[in-house]
Image (cartoon, rainbow, N blue to C red):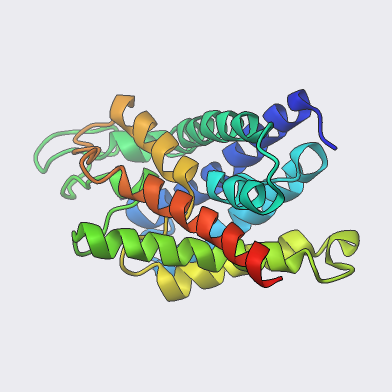
Length: 251
């Protein structure tokens, strides 16, 4: 249905928009000298939901708007069509890294004001430096690999299985409301299941920005926490595959 070139371009653009909004809202809530500083988890959940809304609607005409390797894997497991999976995944990873860089550029001045007490910055910061990885990627509240992995698997099933089932509801796709419903689903996952790990539920969403965080020249940025990085990749991929199997068996 979609050409290889359209899929590649669509997933780059759509995923870049997703991460621009998602990392952007995390930066807005986290960084000093942001007008949205400390506005809370609900703002973050809706920011990510609106990122899905904008990114998926933009990419849908070109690629279907997966924006997420777990979604792509879930669809492939159900349909048994794997030939275009690599194109989706490559576009999603490139788009995620581009989106992370764009979010950094939007908050460039705030990132540069992230200096230790006593050092001067352009904003003459007097606040303590903030760890910045949570703006780009997920960090568990309690570091327990088994629990963290299970959380990501279950939360991703909670995304991909309903998304596949939504396709059975006549009129959602034709009316243009399917993407809107999925965006609200992502908000719901953030509010209900995001507490333990920050709900990656998307390997590209976590890994692409983590790579970018490693190389960005952010003052006092802290670690990129590569020892944890496999969990928000493996968990969503497993969850997406399980969702595809469940959907295929039950519907």
